[in-house]
Structure formats: structure tokens, C-alpha cells
Amino acid sequence: GAVVSQHPSWVICKSGTSVKIECRSLDFQATTMFWYRQFPKQSLMLMATSNEGSKATYEQGVEKDKFLINHASLTLSTLTVTSAHPEDSSFYICSARGTLRGTDTQYFGPGTRLTVL
Amino acid sequence: GNSVTQMEGPVTLSEEAFLTINCTYTATGYPSLFWYVQYPGEGLQLLLKATKADDKGSNKGFEATYRKETTSFHLEKGSVQVSDSAVYFCALSDSGGSNYKLTFGKGTLLTVNP
Image 1 (cartoon, one colour):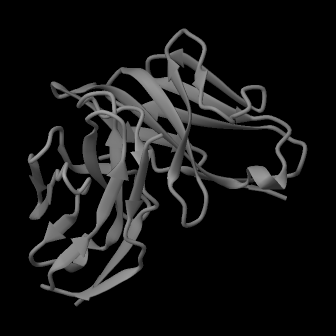
Image 2 (cartoon, rainbow over the protein chains, first blue to last red):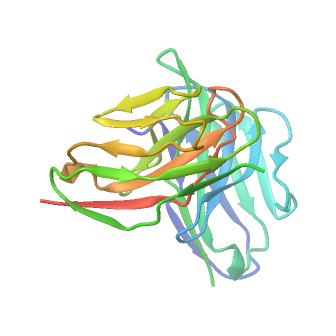
Image 3 (cartoon, each protein chain N blue to C red):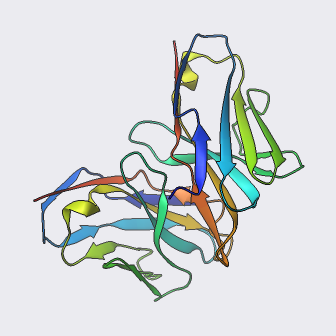
């Protein structure tokens, strides 16, 4: 079964509103969580890396005031797209790094489809 | 910077056909290489990995060999099944074998027909 969940799986919002996406690790504690963005027929692009209880580290070109990341606990990270615009429409994927069944690895969520009208 | 180039799809095969999905990379140092698979409606799953030159990763009948001289990590399977239909991503990490902070290729959609 899934070890990382995302909610919602899809969301449609109006331009100018903010949208929050949750990423949860199930059955393990995630020391690090990652947020990726994927455009159609494109690679997954890493947006930011977050560690529980500390500020996220953003990749070059990613606006930290636009994409707010909160890693409040070892099982939950949230990505908030603030004042969303149509160009923010994309597929957002999180992943969580931790130890599950004795193996240190990275598990991916199923993704969230964001459409901004 | 790091980059991964993989064969563009879609790839359509008949059941029991041989599969190759090409992947080449550009990286500084000695990256670890991965293949991830994404089944419809699910998250990416690690399929196999190799952490140093000449290593062969294998899982579920899939294989890929880390070729430093050609900077390649091609995915192969001798006989595909309908259940192998998915999107396959080649990726690299320059952070040892801990497979975090990944650089991905664009993904290749594989469809296997009965």
C-alpha cells in the first residue's frame, strides 16, 4: 500500500487565491521531505527540500514567498501556493525520506493536480 | 549542472517483447543512478538502482547497468507483460546512494498490449 499520501489529489481554484497541499508519510517518520513540480511531458523538477522543524531550502529560481513550505512534524509537510495564477497550474509531487522496514529510502506521493483558472 | 536524457515515448510493445529504454546522463563526480516506475494513479516507486560504475541493478525482470564510459544507464527487460505498462523515469543523485535530491529525466510511457 501507499506509504506517502497527498491531499487533495486534484484542486481547481480561482486566480489570486491560495491553495494548500498536504503530504503525509504513513507508518514512518520522514526526516526530509521534498516537493517537486511536473509540467506535461517534462521532468520532475525539485522545488524545495524541507527538514522537520527548520526552514525549507529552495532550489534556484523557486520563489519562497510564492511557495510556502511548512514541515511541522515528522509525518506532515504542506505546500501552500499563494496568490495562485494560471502559470502555477501543474502537477505537484512530494516525497519523503526516512527509514521503513530497516531501509533508508525515498517514497513518493501520488501527486496533486492544480488548475488555476 | 546535472541532467538526465531518456528516450522519449510513448513506447508500445506486444506482450513478451524485448524492452529497452535508453538513458544517458551528465553529472559531476560519481552519481548514483536510478530507475523509477509510476503506475497509473500511483506515486513513483523505485524500480532499481546502481551506485557505482559497472554495477547492475535488477528487479522484477528489469535490468540496467551503470556504464561510466558511455554515461548511460539503459533499462532492459527480456519479456514485458501487460502489467509493466507505466511511466518509467531515469534519475540520478550526486549525494551518494541515499537517493535524495534527485534529477529526473522526462519519463517514458510504456504501453504493453496483450
